[in-house]
Length: 103
Image 1 (cartoon, rainbow, N blue to C red):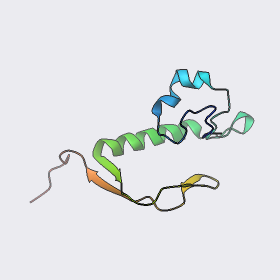
Image 2 (spheres, rainbow, N blue to C red):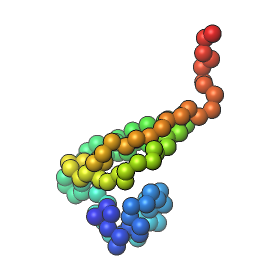
Image 3 (cartoon, one colour):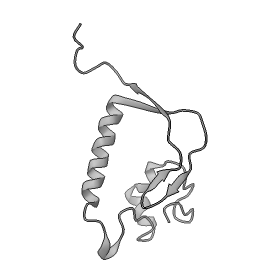
Image 4 (cartoon, helix red, strand yellow):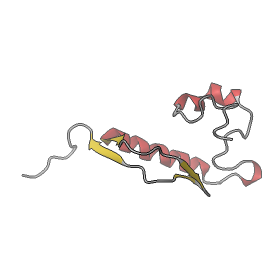
């Protein structure tokens, strides 16, 4: 469902606007269910979303990640979604270090 073009135009493109309040209201309930739905909804959903946001914000403020050219990355849908092959990236620091390095 999460990649159904009926609910998500251009479903494989990264688009943060698809989770805006307006976009959520335009879709039917349960068209996006990363934590299940109804009576079996995951109790840790709010914590997981907050934790993910904090981790991403911390990393993005200090590092830049760039995908290394190579084979196309395809999804491997198991219990959770993961890539079929390792995702190779370069990581570089952003800005000056926050703590001086001893000489």
